[in-house]
Image (cartoon, rainbow over all chains, first blue to last red; front, top):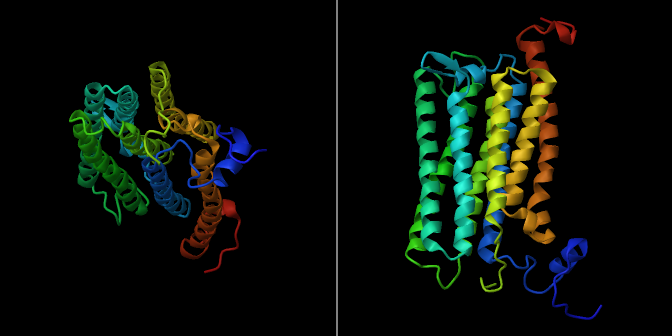
Length: 223
Length: 119
């Protein structure tokens, strides 16, 4: 093998070459994107700690866990539908992930008008999600769910519910602000020279919020 | 590294629409698991299957992991594997806590454990 190769090797050979190379290990990836991925990795551990705490608390409880399917049921037009609000919230968040993915695509096509509007639609869907979560919180609080107890079962239910969904809702709220700021900057043409990698980076954060919800939906609501 | 050398993640729109529809279908499936009141191994198996499929598609396509170089993919996806160890440790721990609570606080309310009851 001769000294400097100009093309990047794929596969395992590529890993060895990238990590042993000069300056940077992550070829073809901007610093902003690398840093966002590393932040998301750390955030993965934070959410994992919450979910593992939930598992520990639930498995060690001698008192039955509240039946989530019933706790989060809604009665609509005289129909009793389990987990209805949560299902709608899930679909809203997936829709927002779709519009975000399209925004990234239009950003790289340098179509700033469409990219910015798709980002604003994403932010709006995120806001809808947070609104529905606020409704869910007030419903449960009015039913007597508190961090230290509730009328439905294991007293730890409230603490886990408020911490996990609260921390996720906080991420969604921050994401809405982040998206709005970047969307405005995109629309104003602030990235015409630097390129539209920022839309992809913002997208990574937003898709991560959706990703976390996939796990919360499965473990907290369906379990 | 400037953005001039950074690779642009430009893919045909069709891929995103397909994954979008797929995520909708998978979410509907996992909701149906609850709606149909499936129980036991079938319930947990399906919930986990749909969860991992959804997570996989979001990471691979929406977050572009499928097109990244292995150096980045492994740096991000391998460290969370240690969570499996954490889950295993806390699983054992919670089982132990549960048995202690049954044994000491509830006076052996769990007959299926077949523990000698001391008061």
